[in-house]
Length: 239
Image (cartoon, rainbow, N blue to C red):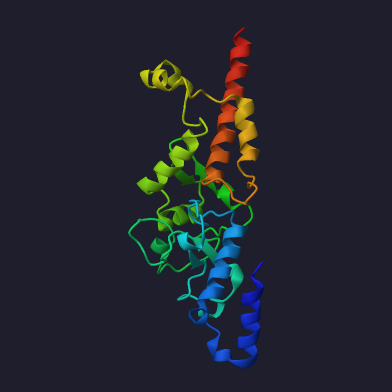
């Protein structure tokens, strides 16, 4: 929910100074409270990339429908998101909210809202860390493209998150020299372990924080569990 300080400010401006009803006139302390509320609601993850956001200093307030497109809703809380980086105009990272700047958003048509129910199901993650759209989903594909969600740095961050759970360690690796070096600390997950991970990784911790890239981890873990179950069934039938 929107912070009470923000709602109170809106009431006061509507009563006493309607000309001030614009996002640019929001006091800094209220913007910080909005950030904190958004971070809490998002499990301290960037709404677009699922990168970790430790605090309000790691993010900016992003407008889902850009301010230039519809200034009338620039103070609508449900149009606000906490996104990486701190400076919403900083494009040097090459992905995320700053790259979306200037785009005309048509929700459901050329952009998938993080607020949309089951929005993550419109995307497909693989073991390499890449993201793709489901077949014939142009809105999801355009979202990936406009946010540069397959930027090399993001793909590597997702791959590392998957690897930390053993989801990039394939059975073929068991015979490789690389696995020989890693086997003391790594092993393939069982189907049961992968399935347990699917639900566990989508649960916030005691501080209300979700694991970075949790949607990718859950989806890849579910696929992994299915493949391992099918493999075990095939082996069983051979005997």
